[in-house]
Image 1 (spheres, helix red, strand yellow):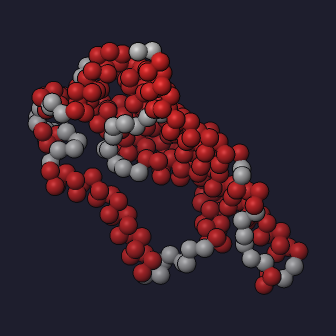
Image 2 (cartoon, helix red, strand yellow; image 1 turned 30 degrees about the horizontal axis):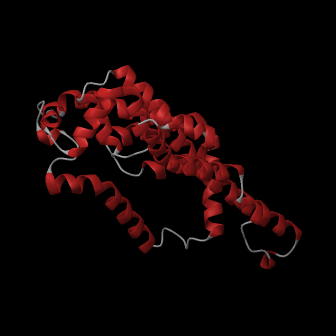
Image 3 (tube, one colour; image 1 turned 120 degrees about the vertical axis):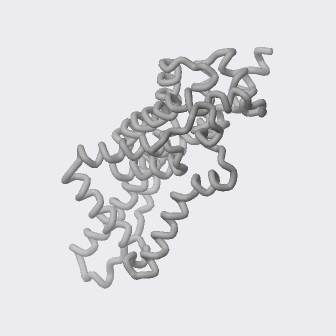
Length: 267
């Protein structure tokens, strides 16, 4: 496949007008279409708690049978998501937490997302350089000023607080001259808090489903199946992972406020 020439506007994410916008949302449209068709054909049963618990159990059985391959596939998927600017990273991270638990999902996500962002960073040095350098929009001017003042800490802030789209920061950092080491380090560290939060949310959902399934199985073992209905135990909602996710998301939301107060007090 021929590669676009350096400086060609069509080589840069976000360009291409209406066609570019369609390409960005195409994966979501295809996924929704596939799910709708499968449900219409009867391939997807009615979605209730028992169905979710059954699917969760089958999925985990497959992962337990091939753990290394499953983690490798998930990490590769995140590399592609980051490199191809596919939306839905938060949902994928939560799915990773549901599948692998908080710590393993966080590790795999941070590695995969950093690798994917770095691939886009390296490509953007040539593919989008001239186009972005000519841009005089507020986005580009703010990024240029921030990187010139303190590249590492400004990029770290942008990773902690997504004030700009993730892909755009990757491209801008490459074109505006950030060293690769600075980009790698700030990206790797900066995406850990949000990744940990979403992975914890997914893992917490897994614990809720597992607790509901265990309670249901205990009921079946103790009495008639007709009297047993799967429900969510109240104590399962306040699991460690879900509480951690809520705390981290709250702290991340407070970062811009804290930075504004710090700047006002140091003016």
